[in-house]
Image (cartoon, rainbow, N blue to C red; front, side, top):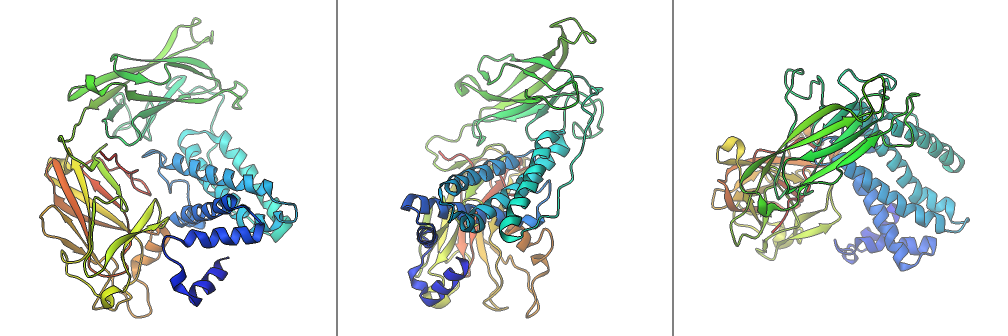
Length: 510
């Protein structure tokens, strides 16, 4: 299919535009597998998603911590996305005739299954090493072997690497107690001593979490897990009527024999504000996790064994009346580049969306590519896109913010005198021109291009600039300077940006 598209595009490039590329794949699927139009469109979406997910990080470069296990629910979202594309492909695989199955397996199903399995194994290996939930990892190792056997029967495929996992003692209770709680965005666990609970690693205070109305997920979670083989019941309470606890009671059921039983060894409790109108400014809520057990070696039936309080700092932030745009949540404003407030053309050139391009949603680029004889512009004079945003904080309350523009990797194809570039501006400040690809000798690639964290491996170039942006409403502008720039995402750090691979999910827009 890829070779056919290459030849077809070379024969007549004008047939294909950024808006109809998927139709090539759907027409191919309809021809090859006699699918209906809806099923052919589903194949196009499957192939597009597999290509996107694998381009985020090449499978051979994945590791257990590529995607954040703690921040922005990144690893979990990746698992959900891979499950969704696998389920969609499997439905079609099961529907094709036996004569078509080998071809569909080779061209569609195997790339999906193989990629899904490798990515999921690595993510679960990371979860395993972090939270000792190795039961799920073991099943994935078996799945990898099954896939190898299946592929051997058709195309003599081979898999030869497995991620490292940690085996934990499940028959001995943790010295900290029978219950462990793990707050979202934390590598720590309470109670007990843990290097991730606080800097000194011992005698750490109870965990503190924050919440505001513009957190993209609209809630936080805390995982309640077992500290050993003893089952327990737990309750969750708070001291605020407007604070919502999705699960107020539950239990864990690890097996005393040392293997995890069919019950849940860990449960997730979601916490949110049910009525923001009752919250004025910054308020504090205490949420208590209380464990009881019927284990006679520890206590009387139903007697409380362990209590862990969590402090929630709830901040009711409100943008100015009449504001329209993206609002800071969690100390960040995150924007998909295609979601512009305005788009201004110059010399017949404007920024257009490239649907499905890049690591998250899409990309935008000046178009037509070589319009006006491949002209370039000085910063502030060319085609531009604008984004309205509202911030409540600045970096260390200094009045400044840090803006990272995620740009697709490219090369300085227009020569040394015209390196690829774009410009960033906030409000009426001076635009800052960014030449984001370092120079290289003729025939060579820039040093930053290669390596495990190079531009090619990560499939992105993060470009960071700093601007003054006091709390309030602002306008961010991206200016064209040279052709061929593709912008995918913009992240404005106001003091709360956390480490992740893909960056924070998109902020709320009002």
